[in-house]
Length: 238
Length: 234
Ligand SMILES: Nc1ncnc2c1ncn2[C@@H]1O[C@H](COP(=O)(O)OP(=O)(O)OP(=O)(O)O)[C@@H](O)[C@H]1O
Ligand SMILES: [Mg+2]
Image (tube, rainbow over all chains, first blue to last red; front, side):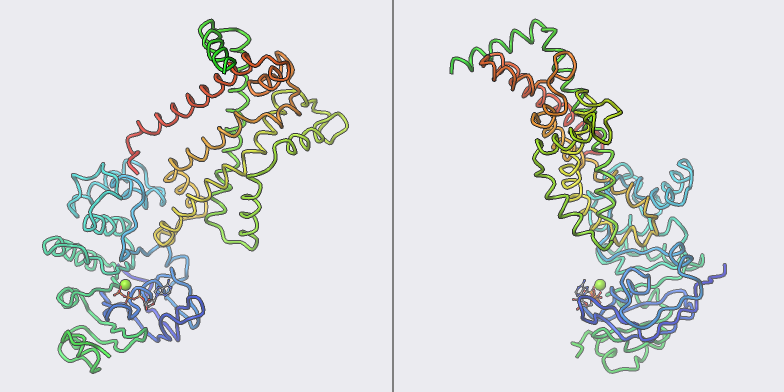
């Protein structure tokens, strides 16, 4: 499957909020590695960068250029947020919602929703109100709801933060499958094990600046900057 | 105190006897108020949702004006509607003055700001919660509005009930535009005003108790409908 969104070129991009630059300026060229992993300490700007790239956060300065036009990007992307957003509906209705927006018939939508519920292990909870799910269940639901439309690019902001070991394995298997099926993943994580397992390239952020952009194998073997090395060692990064 | 007991007793007998005059007046009260509520919701709910999701230049001003209009004096509304509908007014040819339609129009004007303000509060909160998700799902403006209205429906019910409460107890405006004409525009509140003026306190009180009972009954039944809804857990 051809992914026409990439390459993505970011030049001098900043995210401003009440007159202050949260991150940037950031220069970046993503040629479309299957999984781009954004890592960095708390508050380094991972969430902000993902939001900026997806178009959810307003661009303060600079440019973000996808290979396709903005309309196509908006229709072909999905986002899994650090704090899952549950529609005040049942699990089933949450899964059907993005399909209904696209005009998929009720029967079709229901069938696919049931498929995806099975994949993330929520089959027994289909009729429960989504806001009443546990944190981990909500993350799984958010992931299924994002993938159900077969997005070309999927932004994931720490999608496994609330998951136990087994659920994390299952989610990673789903993400691997999505990768293979041609969905580009741009995700952040605090779990270096997960980063090693999934990443093809790594973006290392610190204090809102992009410090490193390296292929994953290289990054984990020998990071280029002392800050990244310290971060990987679990030391305090200055 | 005696009047109170007399009123209660009389109310009881009026209801038990199914007094035809009473039934007529109470039915008209309900008919006018529920019609007004229906049209007011039709205007106020989409307006509230629109104000919640749309950023435009004078949005804050519009919201502030709406909030201020919640305290609109009904008599003034009645007066203005009267002027518009009177023979010499711009809509005089329609011959609506002193009809239930005129009363409905006045009540709609009175409760739209109230319903819209309360609905806007909860819709804005919900929109804040949904914002990132719906934006990432690339929803159209129309889909945004319908999603919010549907998912906030319980809060919207509360807004509608507030509107109902204000409308059913309203007397100033409908007295002016309706004229309290027997068998035509007399409703519970205007009848109470009339009987009180005549010194018939017990009968006025009886009507008052029935008005209160009616309001409670409608509230309870709507709450009951909301409760029995299977997804009513949030
Ligand atoms: N809406 C906002 N208003 C003001 N400051 C913000 C806002 N959102 C984020 N920030 C600030 O921007 C910086 C980057 O935040 P961001 O959420 O991107 O970090 P993060 O790398 O995702 O952190 P974490 O690992 O804790 O999720 C932080 O200092 C944060 O306080
Ligand atoms: Mg974050």
